[in-house]
Image (cartoon, rainbow, N blue to C red; front, side, top):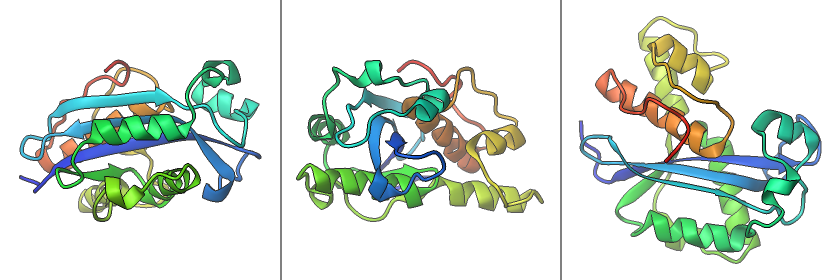
Length: 198
């Protein structure tokens, strides 16, 4: 199994004004995590992880209860203009990798929104559409006679028999978990075995 480019699996944690109302236009990124998978082996070759100080919406208490990220943790962090630029530099040549996420309908539009809000050029940094790992998870579940409703990262990994050490709901951890699904989908096993660390 070979892809034509490396795959960069990203995950974003965001804050929003009200619980259950995490619309892209009313959210700010507070944590960005990514893993780069080699196009031939799908092995993790690099990771990116940074907290982000939100510009418009403070870290709300219900967000802290989900992610563990507190207002104090992001208070002295850079805003997205600087973190986004560092992510682009880490990502490298736009023709050498493609973005992927579990459920691209939220993470990619939110990333685009933050790029726009801070005057960064999304299309200069990234090429093509993003690979939706959630769609791969649904296909795997359907092929294994499992329900395809309410598909989650954790539930899919459980059905795949993949156990990862660590805690979900931090960006790098969730990017690693999504990468494990992609690896398992193609190879029947994964090299990601823990969520924390780089």
